[in-house]
Image (cartoon, rainbow, N blue to C red):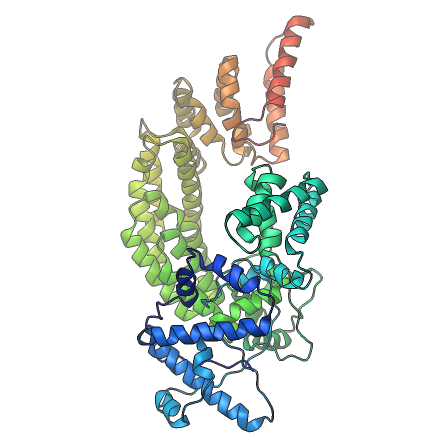
Amino acid sequence: MPLPASPDPDPSRPRASLDPLGTLAAAAGFDDPERWWEDVVEHHTDPADLAEAVAEAMTALREEFADEVDDRTLRREAAMRRNLRQALKDTDGPIAVVCGAWHVPALRTLPPASADNALLKGLPRRKVSGTWVPWSHGKLATASGYGAGVTSPGWYAHLWECAPAGDAVPRWFARACTVLRAEDLPASTASAVEAVRLADTLAALRGRPSPGLSEVMESARAVLCNGDDTPLRLIHTRLVVGERLGEVGENVPTSPLAADLNRLTRRLRLPLNAEPKQIRLDLRKDTDRERSKLLRRLEVLDVPWGTPDTTRTIGTFAEAWQLHWRPEFAVALATAARHGTTVEAAANQVLTTQAAGATRVVTAAETLSRAVGCELPDAVTAARTALDRCAAAATDALELLGALPDLATTVRYGSVRGTDPELLRVALHGLLTRGAVGLPLACRGVDDDTAERALAAVNGADDAVRLAADDDHRETWQHALKSLVGMQDAHGLPAGRATRLLWESGTLDSEAVATRLHRATTRAAGATAFVAGFLRGSAALLTADPKLFAVVDDWLTDLAGADFDAALPLLRRSITDFSPAERRMLGERVKGSTRATPQAAPTWDEPLAERLSAHVRALLATPLTGSGTPR
């Protein structure tokens, strides 16, 4: 019978620092508790004898380190014994207790009930329920809030299954070869045989009873993977950890969190369907708003049943979702059960914890946006506090500006979610003011990677200003862009983008922009970056303005061959966002400008054509750094 643990009245009390298995391993001369466990336990053939040996070892440890057993452990064991006494009264015959080995000495003999009652006196009573949930090897290998983690569940399951036959190592390498061959990697039978021999030799040299996981993986790296860690990581993922999924019976009661989700889906008429389904929600209707809250809260719990459809903009009060329930979500829901017994409580706990641990403004703003979408007032308050704390400590203007898009969306749609948008707008204006002041200096004398980050920050901040800022702070942002454009040693990418934004907003006219473009393109250093920054975004306005088009066209035409090759990757990256229609418009404009120039009768220059075709073939054959596959 699994025994429920008593609630801890003081969660802040430090846990016991003693590691029982580590202590036994050290006493046996092992520096790795996992290796000791594998040699002594996993390769042991008599389970009954093994259980008694573990109990004897734990009893000796409890006697040796009795002073290091904390009060929390003693209270938990008192609660276990109370349940054990009740089971003895209710059941005839022997009772099997499933518990951690550390607790075995405390449960083998039962002291007077009065002693346990005294330990548990005054503790609050809570109603609890339990169930079985399907689990997976991958979940066993990750942190789940309980200290007894299993780092190699797939390996230990393999040892358990092959223990009767005694051929665990050969079977392991046979499975490893299967995994590699499934990925079209070479793995022959002869290689598997050689790997087995090498593992046996390593175990003998190290004085181990049989090859363990370290010997097996070292042999796999040397023989099957030819020293390459990439295929070895594949073996580790598929075999050492594995993703075997457990099963539970249909009549097993569900966990409280799963039961709450089932209740909500029935009430909101959202069945868990394995077939993808598109839905549209009107947030002015109570049922649709509750559906949106449920989907967003599940997303916080890493159960992405619904995916927002961001390809369609359907207004402030409407949302589009695609629903698709997958079997692995049952495991994700079981994992999330440690956060709370209801979807609302669990999502609130996750967001509150994220807010408390936030160290960057962007993280706090994202948490605030999710909390507002989930309509969790406590989480909203915690995230708002975290945003103020992170903003007060932040000194990087790009970090401050990077938080604006999420915050602007929250301000824009906060009223739909029952949150006062003006309280959030104050935070947005504060971040905007500080970020705008520091933007020009943040773009001065920076490398290309930082310049890309600055360009992204400028784009996001400009969208946020247009979406949620008031007139005064829009003026503050325009002033920051003007300062950036006027700075001589600012990197060309953000400076060019700022020039484009000022032009689109009407702050700079085409004549002023043409002057700045001409000035930038006449400088050898930074010309490509400035033009690339200016081109980012839409091409519609560029094709509609002959003067600006001519400046860029003349600059490209005058580039020498080597300079053109060097500029091509960055320029190509700048036009990847152009739509097919915009690219056709640019092509027509280029052909139009070519036809306008008087031409002599066409003659075919064979040597020139050969040189041009060779140059094009070279460009297509050589990947362009940072530009993806050439077209």
